[in-house]
Amino acid sequence: MSVLLVCFACGHQQQVFWARTEQRICSNCRARHPILVRNERAIGKRAHWIEWADKPGIPARDAYVKTHGGLRWIQEMRNYKLMWIELKFLKIFGFLATDDIIPLFSEAPTAALMYWVHRDNLEWRRHKQADERADQAYVERVDERISDLLPCFMTPEDWGVKL
Image 1 (cartoon, one colour):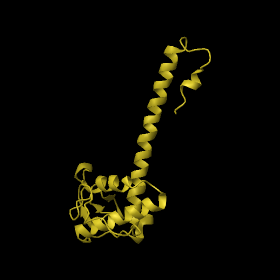
Image 2 (tube, one colour; image 1 turned 90 degrees about the vertical axis):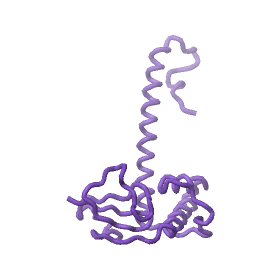
Image 3 (cartoon, helix red, strand yellow; image 1 turned 30 degrees about the vertical axis):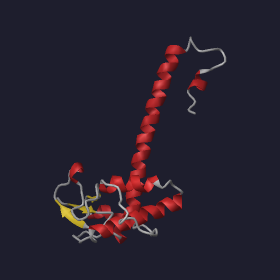
Image 4 (cartoon, one colour; image 1 turned 90 degrees about the horizontal axis):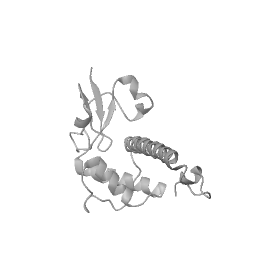
């Protein structure tokens, strides 16, 4: 059974028979972790920008410029810091954008790039929630150990407050 790899940066689509996570790299622009579509029914809502077929992508340099412009547009709309663009570009392509890649103006991102940013934000949120759960478990363990040593003006809830 084949799967479809869809690059969110250059639009390259390729049917492959097996795609391990560490090997999912666009063969056209070298973007990491392209979108993986397991079957035609999984396309669903994304049918307006994904077709089940091999399609060539745009040249790699154009993909870099278009992706950077799309990231800049998202950064401007969401009021992120400028470093956010560089970190996402580094995560996508594995290198920082040079001056010849950075476009002069932002441009609206493609639907595939918006989907990738959404997926990356969900992954970040899962890691952040796991860290908070681990911190909460640590605070509960500390509370049990030092409950007798707490000063009278501090309660266990006060020690658990994050500043």
